[in-house]
Image 1 (spheres, rainbow, N blue to C red):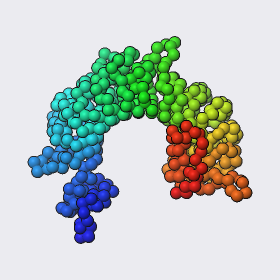
Image 2: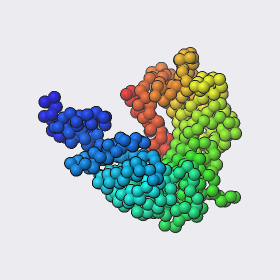
Image 3: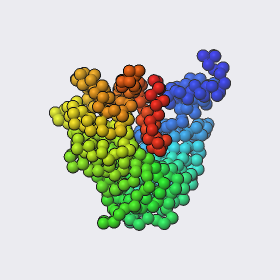
Image 4: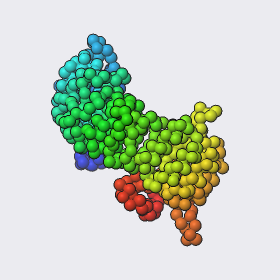
Amino acid sequence: MTQFLDLNDDVLDAIVSHLTVTHALHLACACRRVHDIAMRRALSRVTIFNQRKRFMKFAACMLSDISYHVIYLRKVHISLFGDVGETDFSSAVRLLTHVLRRAKNIQSLGLGPMELMIASVPAVADAVCGMENLEALWLYNGGQETILMLDKIQSRLERLVVHSWSDRLTTDAPQVLPLIAHIQSLQSLGLHNLTFQDEPHPHAIWRNVRILRLESCRAAMPVFVHSFPTIRALHLKGNDRRNPQGETVRCWPSLDELSVNTVEDLLEWPITCPVRCVSYEALIQDPGDAEQAFVQIKNVKPIVLSLSILNSFSDCWAEVARSGHRLRAITVTLVNLYGSASRIGTPNYSRWMQNVLPVLGRSQIMFLRIIIPGSLHTDRLVYEKCPEQIMKSIPSLRCLGFGDKPSTMCWWRIVTNRARRRELKQISEAAGMRVLEYISSETFEMSTVFDESLLDIRG
């Protein structure tokens, strides 16, 4: 223990940085020599969700006369559910306001329910807006007062997320975009349960925003194409159509990433530009949805595709193979809903192997990851034979992942041996993901030439 305490502060700080928050707090209480170093680690991230007594103790500690620990706060996320007029809730929000006024070094802040907090203690909004070192801000369960406070934010935010109540605010409510027009430092914006006017605001334009997330919003696509002309990643979920009927909707020139929940999300927002990586989060199980999804995939010409399907939909895959000249990587989750609450997907896998694998053999796929929910141990024969069958069926394939969930995948690289025959060599998950990262990169998009040196990495 003495040798440990004799280390200089820089070395101790590096060691303590690997501790959990709980362990750092215990160390701070047990040893005066490293108290400050351990407290910096313990208070670097504070998360309190609906635990009012715990928050009251935390706030009392931060506000005590002899405490200087408040300067160590960096990432703070707090939710304090209650009702306006409730004494305990108002007291908690009042203490929160005092903590925020003292915590000058907070860089990431998440608060909710924000509208109730402001209604109970209006000064909490001023405390948030006056924080000059904030880089990221999450405001949950907001309303009109929450939106109005955005105009007063003084920090150079890089990330902003605004959630309103479950019922969308009408177009008569204050509009978010004009109120954050002064925050030109934004790089990522998330908006949830909000309604936007159909006409773009002429001065609400952000050229530094790269990531845009819209969920359960009522918004016209042209407004966001105008306001965020340089985004690279777009995430859509459950947004209402508000685009002019019968008119061609202008799109972005290109995107690096497009993530949607269901097929309907791209019916509301018809993305037609080239997209490097496309993912569908929800299960595609209806033939009509599958047909529509593959039309969308054909339109955006992805290099990397990720989706979950119930049936093989071989006709849809055939169309993509014919037209998807850019498609090089696929992550597919094969789900079987019939007679199994656990969604064991082996029957679906058999149909997919029989109907789709020959189709993909005519493509230029280099990376394939197949996820089959459920236990593969129920059919070891499938598990043992499938990699070899897949390798032989897809001549262009260079990397294969196969398993029942992403965390327990088996990975192989496919190489040509001295006899000029293709064979499987097992690799780690990290190596497989490096291949996917490379194929997803701009470097690969510019050349579409596979970097053979990636297959030499065995780790």
